[in-house]
Length: 117
Image 1 (spheres, rainbow, N blue to C red):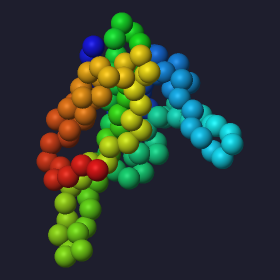
Image 2 (cartoon, rainbow, N blue to C red):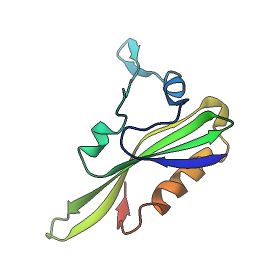
Image 3 (tube, rainbow, N blue to C red):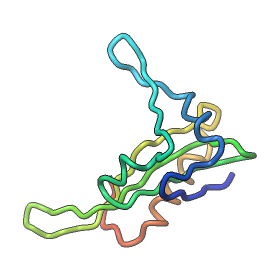
Image 4 (cartoon, one colour):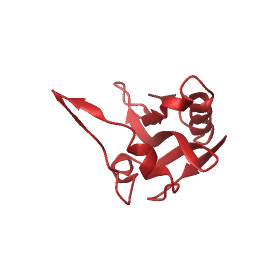
């Protein structure tokens, strides 16, 4: 398994197929999210954004997005923080190393942040 970091709108070739496996409840119905050609646009609105993918033999096993932004504490001090979102792990990869490798890659590739949430 490899973990790769993506910036801008780029995603691995198997990303769309990976995303189709996920749906979310909305009342009695379910919906899917299609990130479109620029998969990080939403996250870049908050700050610099990066997607990390865990891949094996051309298949995407998991994804995690990290956005870096400045936060102001109640006392006025500013801190750099990393927002981790859009975490998905394929059903076949759950319980394996994909989640831990994604988290390590995201936090290790974004030095200088004081906090992650």
